[in-house]
Length: 201
Image 1 (cartoon, helix red, strand yellow):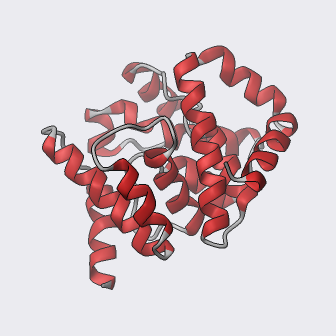
Image 2: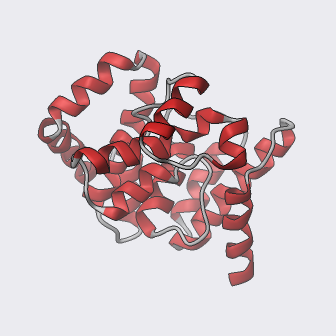
């Protein structure tokens, strides 16, 4: 376990105790375990890639704040916060939990850093031109210790031997293959993110 990430996570849980407490009340124990695992992994990856551990941990800590909203609730909150759902979001409204959380935190002045907000907003689908913190949170969401799927251990190892963009490409490709394998639709945002990375090769 990465010590810097652990220390930072403990610090931020105390600093944002009210917001964290509100989140605990609304989410299941399993979701909270995932969130803490993601925050820890985000901090560890940030340290590995020379990025801000604090920003990565904070984005990871609140990335799933609205994850357990129903589709109708997510769309209603998106309207309230003036988040445009797009065609994909209207069809699969639960993917809006990241964008609406980021919009809520910004509106209420709870989190102001644009890199952290981007990490929260983009962690599910990805997006073209994502910054380092957003890429790290996207990867942490897929690689945190509670995740178990074929090839995850090898992927974790490959990621830590790569540079940030290559690592992000590896995780994004795995996510795309998984979605296609399960017959799930891909959003244009995900495709744009992947195409941009491939064009850089």
